[in-house]
Image 1: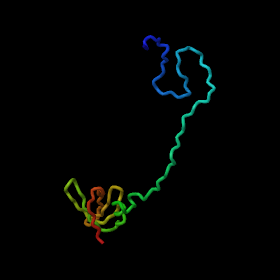
Image 2 (image 1 turned 30 degrees about the vertical axis):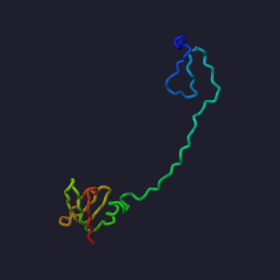
Image 3 (image 1 turned 135 degrees about the horizontal axis):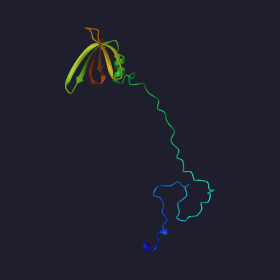
Length: 129
């Protein structure tokens, strides 16, 4: 049924979306007339307003986190147990000197050397008053 109609009756259109302001291709070699129509603008969607979330205290200052609580104990003598691997506990003790985001610093009682340790392997902290 469609084979009887010549190909020039089926205009070839590109397979990608085109904006309305682009002229459609035609098979007729007619001169292009200037288009005085106002181009259509796509509808604008209104974005919701940006809500700024008020920043809370950093992890280092919030006592609900290990770092924040340990910062309140700087200067105290502590005994800390660390979990190494899956079943090995190692304890260290000394004066708590500093607390960072991912580390603590203890001053060892015998040598007065500083010992830096990973805060994420801490399991128990005993604070001596």
